[in-house]
Image 1: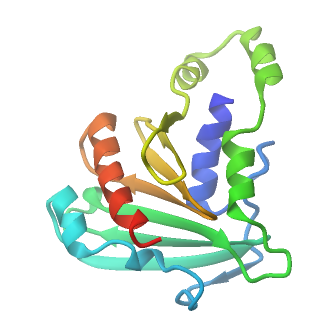
Image 2 (image 1 turned 180 degrees about the horizontal axis):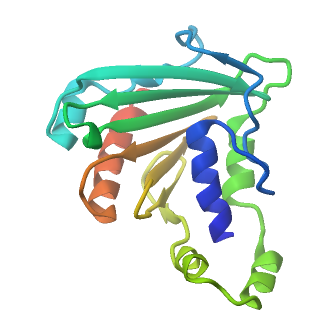
Length: 199
């Protein structure tokens, strides 16, 4: 289960991944860079330069956006580039698409964070664990209170991310910089509060 969440983080960030046995978002059927429509949210409009500067100490230098549609989901990403590139912020927003096979993101959220894996975990505990596997088992997603409808934090040495669900959309925030996981969590939570006001 721990490994599954690590894979999910990559899947959501890239809007799809290869076979992993976790029902990830598939490779998109259509890839576009069009702006969000009237009923779709634009992730680049969910944070201001002032808000980012209050967290990272630098204003936005540039913004890069992209959108992908795959099997019922519209996955939009905004990369807020800062003068110090390592401090940049990535925001991914998953919404229901307009495609005929549109799915509710909340379904994927439940499948990802609430699927019962007790039996598989018991089997994994009987297997000898490598050093990397053992580390992942000790670092399961941390459920957070007071953010949206539900929130989880994945704190890792590389690629820490905060996931927040509100109604039928969810966001993924990744904050760059040299700080430790605890400081990145606090920064991510602050940014999430700004974003949630606009969802």
